[in-house]
Image 1 (tube, one colour):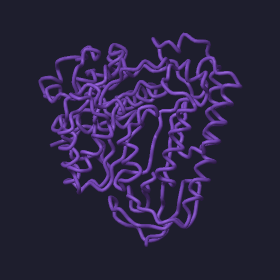
Image 2 (cartoon, helix red, strand yellow):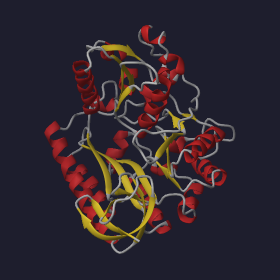
Image 3 (cartoon, one colour):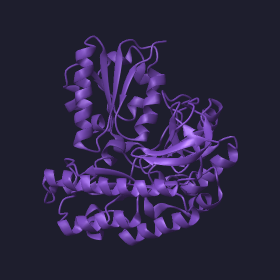
Image 4 (spheres, one colour):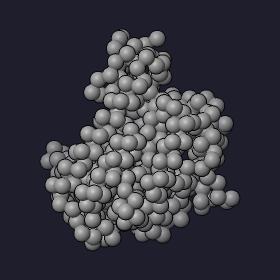
Length: 414
């Protein structure tokens, strides 16, 4: 069978869904699938650029555009030269959308806000990757003032425990040693299921029912929704990776309120302190927006001071990007150049924190999942490069950190 070319933008959930589409579209000739992201204008620009390039390089190929940006504004993407079909976020995951007959049927984008469930999909291979993603949740019921994604993903829906366990078991049987649970708002998992279980219960069940799974990791989590079971796993379960990626967005209470986030700065401080008490070497990442509307120099300095004081080593920093139709897009804007300048200062603070964190791991024994023959990530998600003989990607090696460079740690195999 031939395989489609898939260009994926955005989050880990998109990465997972691209693999679902890869399976459904196998056998179709001359197809390029562009899985878009709508988080920022830059993500959309990159997708448009990729479509133009694909059309130029493969003029006879059928280009199918899908993902959040396509869901939100299908007509805009359908009008691009070379695009033969636009699929919504629900339709892209249906096998019926990828038959030869369906490919001639025109665009298919349904009302995502009417979605009531998430259909599980069995994926056993992730192209070019040594860790696998499992979708446990879709959509979001919150309305942060800067975010358009609920309108691309619909309401929050959870994948039942049994389907998640089946997926994890299949991936482990295929040779994956680390699984990342992913979704749009994964800490809301279970709210629509009988008994309203929390995410920690799902993690406990996965680890208990798939004892051969060596490493379980979470994607981004909401600081105020980390439940007691998750804290217990973090403290006591060594197969539950010591890494938290927090959906922080700002370190200023005023900005957080204007974003309509559900946490304040003190809430995040308590989460970070508790995490470091549970696992002193834990890696902590965070998403941060620079230059949110109304952000003054004083308010920005509050976020910068917070990032520095909390020593957050793994920052994902985004200059604020207007999303049409969101409340923040109507607020007084910060100049684009100033957004970029503030983002650069935040990234520099994150790089300094990363260097300090990596220095603290020197001499430590680490367990590293190799993603290439010479590099991978530790349990704490520290990037590690092997100083000695290359090994096979996909292995988990025991190493000792011997040096720090601009990319992370250098280590020798034990």
